[in-house]
Amino acid sequence: NAGVTQTPKFQVLKTGQSMTLQCAQDMNHNSMYWYRQDPGMGLRLIYYSASEGTTDKGEVPNGYNVSRLNKREFSLRLESAAPSQTSVYFCASIQQGFAAKNIQYFGAGTRLSVL
Amino acid sequence: AQSVAQPEDQVNVAEGNPLTVKCTYSVSGNPYLFWYVQYPNRGLQFLLKYITGDNLVKGSYGFEAEFNKSQTSFHLKKPSALVSDSALYFCAVLASGGSYIPTFGRGTSLIVHP
Image (cartoon, rainbow over all chains, first blue to last red; front, side):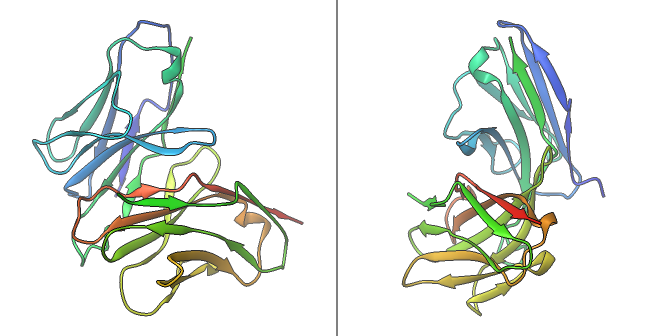
């Protein structure tokens, strides 16, 4: 099993450019998440998808959009990148339910720099 | 609302000594509590969890954590630290029966000195 796969691993953008971060999981998980990690800030939730067909805003959604393409895939789009979006982005998934123990599985991250 | 506090940005310990990384939480109802570890340039990896039952839970790599309901704490411990334990550690809480949105602490950098 690959788990949670994120692409690309690294990206450099110029201010105003757009890009889509891709995420796919092969564990048949219901819920998927996008976080950003900044020094001293921990993980902040950008958007999440509780199940296929639904998406909701997290703590820091401004400047981002998401698409839950199917149960496996959850993409994050930056329409007009800004230097404040320089960060490390993590995708995660979780299988809900007591029996599943609600453990989150994380991708390896996308390191994004906006110049 | 739920929250997690990790009061120490960094913990330093000598190899072979016991280590403790502190975590306190606030949540409505019964908590699900987790510890995750992040090595440099990697994603977070699950370490251990408390769902119900025994207050002392054991996880990967010799780590354990004790759930203390009265103190709303879930401190991570290891009897004998290794240099390879040096990493960033995150505590997380999830409210049972609520939305599946974990709340993470800001992380504690553990440095184990040879």
